[in-house]
Image (cartoon, rainbow, N blue to C red):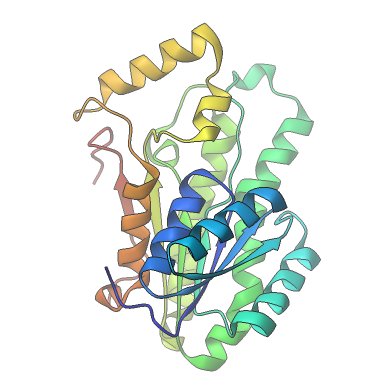
Length: 254
C-alpha cells in the first residue's frame, strides 16, 4: 500500500474491469476517488465497493468524447472531492475486426474514446495541476500500440498516439512538477475482453493469447492497478515520460 492520503484521483472508465480495480486500489492507498464512467450504474457500483472497503469515492457520469462534458465532470469533482491531484485515463473500447471490414463510423468511435478522450481529460485537469505545481497523469495504452495487434488497427493507432502524446506532454509539463506516464496492459481478463472475443472464435483467440504469454495466463485488473498505484505515488516522483508493459512477458521491447 502506498500513501495517497489527502489526494483526489479521477479515474475514467472506472465502472468496470481495469478501471474499477484502479479506483479500488487508489482508494485503498488513501485517495479520494472520482469514479468516472459513461455507465452511471457501473460507476455507482464501483463507488459502493470502494465505500465498502472503507474508502472515499463518488460516481461521476461523463462521456469523455465530449470536451464540455469532461470539463463539467472535473468541476463536479473539484467541488465535492477537492482539486484533482491524479488523473488516470483508463476508459477505452474496441471491436476486433480486420481493418478492411471497418466502417468510418467505427473509426470515429474508436478514435473518440481511445485518443480524443484522454486528450480531453488531460486538458481539463492541467490548469489546476500547473497552478498547484504538482500532479500525476497515467494513461492506459496497450501493448497493441507497441507491437501491433491483428484486428485492432485503428485501436492500435490510437494507443500508439497516447504514448507519443504522453511523452510530449511529459516534456512540456515537467517544469511544473507534473509527471506523465503510460501503462500498457497485455491481454487482461476483463468484461471488455470477454465482450470482444465472444463465441467459439473468441475462445480460440483467448487460447492463442494465453499460450503466447510466457506466464501462460491472462493478466488481472489488479495487476494493472498495482502499476498505476506505483506511477501516481511519491515513489515515482522522478519518473516521467515512461511506458511500462504489464503483459506477463508477451512483449519485451526496448
